[in-house]
Image (tube, rainbow, N blue to C red; front, side, top):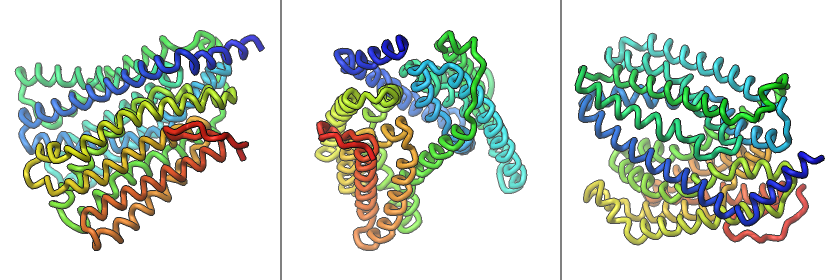
Length: 450
């Protein structure tokens, strides 16, 4: 009883005077890391393109893209599950379950990631005659990074769940890219770099980043976890992980389906216009993503103790912070978007209307709040998966229907409608199941969850 009382007091502290400062600190740290990582990625692309040339850079990019894509299903959605469950177990003092989940996750991801690496390696072997030798070697080396990437994200999810939001992101967003750029520059003066060698450097840097994340997790694990016998709920954890995986995969498909359909139905020029506009508009969601990274574990803890009032205040403050930032970014793209598009070239100014439509869509996406995060962190991830599936189907149908009428702007309108549909549907799910308002407005009278 004493432990529970102290934990409740901690939850109240998190949502009272210190909430705003904690939220700003965590969100600003996450946002800073993400912006810095984006800048490092840009520098990496320029550096490698100059060192490797067009063909070598292409082999490197293709191999790393394949490995990154495969590492996502290899995680089985367990990174998000770890964030939610470890926050909950820590709040409850359920050290046996916490220990069991960590051990079960490691075994599961090790098996799935090694199986994924082996499967892709076999596919590359079967089609090696159709690929250039450097492409084949790059892909084979890249298969080594699949388990490493999977475990980096698993460790990140676990450290986040324990409450160390910014620290959790340092190995992936800071250590790995800084090491890669440094080693690439140094080795370029010593040997002639190629696609496979550059991929090998990437594998080495990822391995070092994983080692750091493992040390961080061991350091921040609560002491009682080290002295208990683990308890396993394998079937329940696997079920939740698969739902997270389905939701995550559907989210990626929903993001990319418009680009795919524009390319299939209209051609390369229109695809380039759409993608240039989309890459700009997506910046509007940056702060929301940073806030989500910060508040996820707190949502899980507050929901565990049924602290609905504090949870509502947390969500409202978070949504308002993200919405204010999104409004500024969206206003720039709506009123001065031609300046941004001019960076791509005069021809890309034709994407002005697309940029405006997508900017409005992503602005509303942010203003409606962290809907999927709320559902995922409170054990209602099934609603997220259902909403994403319906929105993806709607997006595909409307894109097919509107492109013949409005051209590439029709694809942007389809994306706009599907985003609004998805967010409104999740807002309704949250209101009915949890009894809170996820939007920046907040203050909606609470109803009895049903």
